[in-house]
Length: 104
Length: 200
Image (cartoon, rainbow over all chains, first blue to last red; front, top):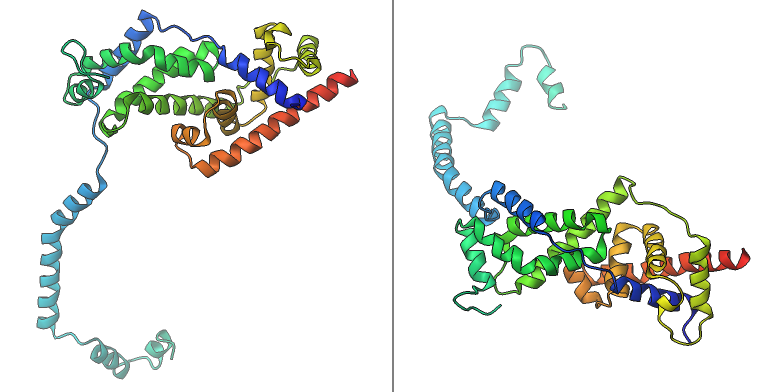
């Protein structure tokens, strides 16, 4: 035998399924179509893979130029980081300032 | 839908819309307005059906390019309609616009009559359909938007957990847990009323 609440839920379900459908009138249909026309043609969703690909290829020449410029810069300036740091320590006008900065 | 010269298939109409023939959507609207109104009428209050159905058709129109034409359009559209109804309730609960009515003597009488009846008489033999709907609305208003939708789909419409999950776009595990909890909550609400009614 079903318990009381199950009996009630079943009865509520029957009432629920007998709900009347609201008829769609002509005026409503015209309103929806008016709204649709105001929206224009539906656009395809953004394809992130395609967008990423396009962005990467657009940025590629800039990245190449940057790499070349940095390489040339480093070669022409003859920059050696270890040498530069040692030189800074050696030529430190105020004693131990740079050392303190570097945690010495 | 079968393809005949005077009756183009759904996919044909959709392709025409996407390629710029906006007016072709009227055919979709005419074809599915009754179906969609039927779904929405079951889930939202009578005076909000037209607006929610309007919203669902707009969503469907804007999402047409993402519709995979291998699946059935009717099913895709029903999923959009269900989500529009769910969003309607979410918005209603958030703005606290859900009416919290209380049950009257007549409602308690109906509950007692249904419980006392050992035969399987129809519910309307115990009272009017209006009263039953009022009891249902009262109980559903006490649940969250999520619980409400799951309860309506699984217990009141008799869908499987998988079907409900597909329509709502949730996982089956989520729907299973929610349907169990929402039924428990509904049972608790009703048994509270039954006990209260008995005391009175």
